[in-house]
Image (tube, rainbow, N blue to C red; front, side):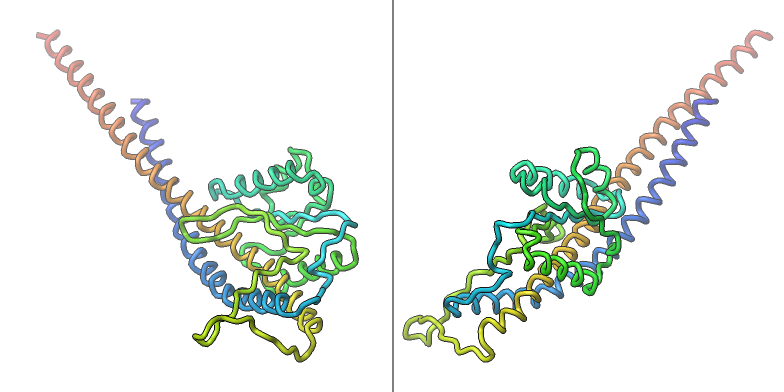
Amino acid sequence: MAKTREIKKRIKAVANIKRITRTMQMIATAKFSAASQRAVAGRPYAEAIFGLVGELAAAGEGVEHPLLAGSAEGEELTLILTSDRGLCGPYNGSVLRTAMRHFAAHPQAKSGDIELVGKKGVNFLKFNGVPVSAHHAQFGDKPQYEDVERLAQTYIDRFSSGEVSRVRVVYMKYHSAGRQTPEVLQLLPFETPEAKPAQGDGQGGGAAYYEFSPSAPELLNELLPAAVKVTLYQCFNDAVVSEHVARMVAMKAATDNAGKMGKNLTRVYNRARQAQITTELTEIISGAAALE
């Protein structure tokens, strides 16, 4: 009797867990849909700025800008984007392992400034002896452009003054709902995309000629900081979308496992109950036979 009672308690506990994980899966799915729309909506703007910067850098010969030139002075700065909450599968582990491989390959990055976003990376970095110079906890799972812009402007000011020589971001890049990859992105010095060759009028291609008004340096002064800020904001959006995808997949797997465990426990309970009834019937029959 005690065994069947214990199994019934386990079945009830598994059912409660299944309801919780199912609810969390639905919440993660809704958040993923909203975050995915924000991330996808910002990509055309980012691509347009990248195209302008690339064409400007390629067409303006001899054009230089402090954000395009690296400096040997100053320390390297690495920003690691993790989540505030767990239950998202291998998401945080993949990002943090990528960061540790980066530190192993670039010792100067490990000895420089390391900043962290999210709570889940604090204990990991502390356990591995990686000092964190700043922990940004103001972003959450809905990063606002104004907050990211202030952070990017801080990096631009520190890079321009020579305080830091390089800024990199370790984050989970979102490609699609079925593919996310941890990457190390160089934010500063800013790497301009290669400009595509201009198409001709059908009589053969030719290089485009630009006349700048205002001048190319003035345009770069406006476009490059904006491109850096948009790039960092896109990193935050990709990280949030990837987190929701990972949590959605993890909770679906947990729900499926809870369902399978509930079926197995129900089968075990039925067998135990059948054995108990058989034993009771055998005792009754044996007792009746003894009285005859």
